[in-house]
Length: 170
Image (cartoon, rainbow, N blue to C red):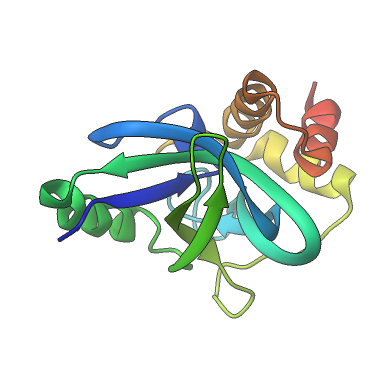
């Protein structure tokens, strides 16, 4: 298998638990990051899912993130592990990531509206209220949201949705 680039736009930004050999900061076009996916297995529990980010199609939008290059010899194992980790509604898509270091095709895990854990849009205050009280085996939903906002700030990225939610949580 050839080397594979994995696009991190959520927890992979601050915890890239991958055997990567290169990373590039960049963005995908036509996608926006939203706290619209339920997490019944990591940042919440069945019946009380946390809210985690997914990508939603938005013409003219841009989602900043980090691509991690995984060697071909490790790619199948990494993708299998990510498939298990993202089993609560995410599917793999391949997108083009633009980067000053060179554009690359990336594998992005996206939760689509048809999956059973998709929560969809809600007012920012309602999203923050859910995040504030949810937790699961991977930790609190609050920690997830604030770490995501911090990682985006560290990248110099602007994400109005994530930052609005984080502001309500502070």
